[in-house]
Image 1 (cartoon, rainbow, N blue to C red):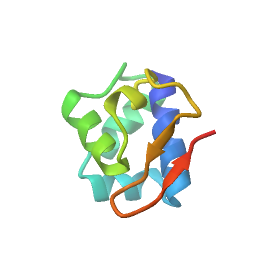
Image 2: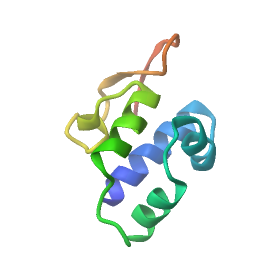
Image 3: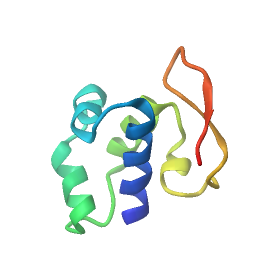
Image 4: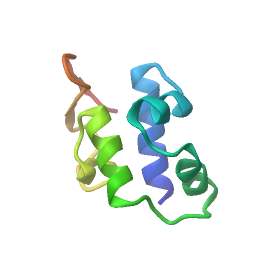
Length: 85
C-alpha cells in the first residue's frame, strides 16, 4: 500500500503540513503510518482511513486509489476545491 502512504503524504504537502502534524490534528496514530511506509503494515484500519479521509475532505475510495488522480477533491471544511496532480 505504498500508494496509500504517498497519497496521504501528498495531501499533507498540499495542506502545508507534515505527517506528524496531520496525525495529531486528525487523531490518528503516527506509528500506523510509519508502519505503512516501511512495509510493516499492508494497510490502515477502516477507522484510521475514515479519520484521514474526513480530515482532508476526501473519500476513503480516493485514499485507496479508486478515484483517479486529477479528480477534483474537496479540501478541509471551509476551503476551496483543488485539483490534485
